[in-house]
Length: 518
Image (cartoon, rainbow, N blue to C red):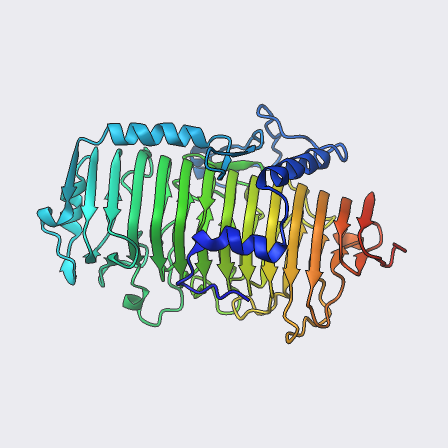
């Protein structure tokens, strides 16, 4: 079993994932196979298909006048397609747009300066807030931060800014002891008007949660209290950065405000075209990486582990390694990892917001997360709930879940390798779930498809080494039932299909049985 602690180098994830899943397909073949399965899922039934021009007919009324200014009707965009670049890396089809804008960023930098020349001292004591502000000025600048620990009350980035350290663990930006609880350590300068072309690289970001003492909750509200927040940012990069012990999130790619105007609405002022690469984090009060109401986000070669969960009441902490949350669209995750979180990857929304849609996962390893992969739209599950208008389109391939376990983060949550709830058009291709022979799974199913999930394909699923597990794959019936499920080329010994489930296709490589007589 790999040891995925805070020292783990996620650039090794691709190799680790292939070893665990036993992937023998060339990445190009895996992409083609997965895309073909996704096209099948979209044509199972008469579920509305994704169109760039489709918008929702909204029944729910605004509950507060502020939503008139901060929300807009959501649209289902055409899903991202996955490509291989010249070096064989998995990239979304819009990645070339980011590459063009990166060249524009470099062309617009007028000067390169060292923050020390503006009075910063990396002694871990001196307040360097003013030095960073002067060095960044009005932008069009590359600010070099040499080795050391630089204390600041916050850093705000204007347009056309590069903030470059000497490497995570070598250059640290630390939040001042007197900074308020809601402080974002690094963020863009103007959340309302928005900012563009921002680049942060080679830093450890220490939110210094110890300054708060033994508080009951370490965060305030919205997108505050994080190590790095991009809110209403177009064209942003974060590379080789470590987030440490934030009150809320290590990295938040967000809109100006989170928005809860109802399913079918999303926030105005979301971020667009942002790439997080080789970022790591631990000790987060809520999620390691999160996205809200933002489009075209790439997260690659990154690792999140060991949250504190202190943004929530003890025992009820939905702290995920990577969370693709309310209103996010066209988010691509490539070869990331998570360990000892509530969810390894959670794709979700709150009841009173639009779900994340068009999410692609190509390679992920989850270790000891309570729910390794958790796809859900809260409050749109049972037959007496309103059906989700927005929970569409998840593509996931080459996933590895190792030893999902009970967690003190969320004490009443039973462990799962995968849960699919409320989402439509979901493909999971090549998924390996490995238990721990010494761990009692207490009769729980390993994979659950439930709560109005529809048009779900599970292909080449392997479940092994569990003690006292329930069904390998359980398709729930009754009030929780899912419809239009296809399970093929799998090796589990048991598939359990509950009453009332319609349109189930099962083609397994090993004998399978269940209450439906399969």
